[in-house]
Figure (cartoon, rainbow, N blue to C red):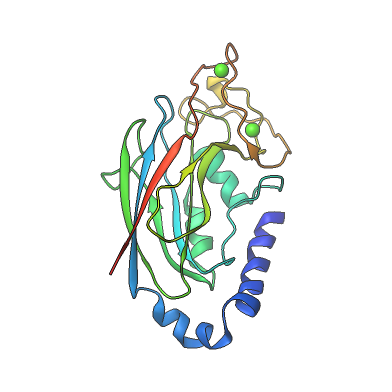
Length: 220
Ligand SMILES: [Ca+2]
Ligand SMILES: [Ca+2]
């Protein structure tokens, strides 16, 4: 919940400080959709589907999906623990500095991005809406996720490692994993870089880092 508050506070700060008042009043919003960004998300793992998630284009500092060393928001927790993206999508859609929001899905438009596969998404952008963020769960983990947080929209090929949301203990027990069980043990921790699969504990589904790669292209 703390991070949810931070999300809102960050938006207020961006409106007051980052985006000129005139841009917020009309010019900024009009600029949304004057350009497009296409992002291809590639799952580099051989073991971990990427769950349904969320992608958003936004102004600088208007969206902050997570910080390493801080508590995860409840919206991020629901993606990281269960692949439930509706709360995150709904919350992002209400933020003032947001341009476009889309569900992250497999290439067919639904389901996960399977290991070794890619999916491509095109979103509105333009003007001050020059950042892109996304989050998706590593499905066969307790609360592992990956994504981008405020990546600048420019032709680029960034990568991301897996993170641990710090909300569910990494039992790796099938009874606690979203595809095979409903169990859960609270972790009460902070977002960290994911320590990875522990061999011999629960299921053994390791992945190499960086677990995800992206190709960002700018369209007219
Ligand atoms: Ca965890
Ligand atoms: Ca294991």
